[in-house]
Length: 273
Image (cartoon, rainbow, N blue to C red):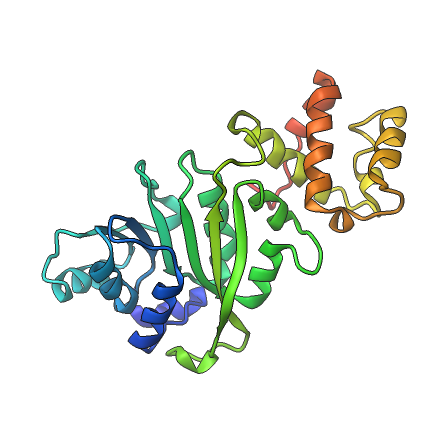
């Protein structure tokens, strides 16, 4: 795909090397790190990553851009290029971090791919829409996206980025997001799939309240106990705190029957893979 056609993916490239340097300074990247970058364009981020870390893995499906990156960096042994669509590529099997200016229209799909991988990145830094950052932080209320990420990552907005810093000035606010992996995740690895399905189920029932959303999963007495224990009366799923979601899920693991779990296990909204 030619460089100018990337606008269709809502990718706005940074113009200033000094800005890239400032963003890298705000990250936790170290000399010994392996870093993955998605859609590097002309390589303004790639060039500086190569100066700072041991290896840079670039995912670039445009063979012309990939060849130019190799040429510009003198075929550096530190640079590994995967000439593929990121959503179809295999992620690293060694410890790694992510630093990328991602296509805004693919934000959810990109982050979902990382979260569902067997080896999670140690940290992830994304230049992305401010609105999307708030969604993953869970501000002002929790979202499906925030609840699916928070058990494994602490998420922050490290600052806003001036829209004039891009080759094509975006019409929306842009921020710099940090996803820092928790030393000990809040959900055990063997329960990762169940937790994901539990959250997605509750957010896709189109019911007014949390209790209504799970009325097919919990028995009436169980719902009443949850309502009293966690003060859930009339609360929507977005109004239930992350800590409460965690406690309810752990309760679900303890008390649910195989038939209750099967309802969630077989539930798959068409728009969620």
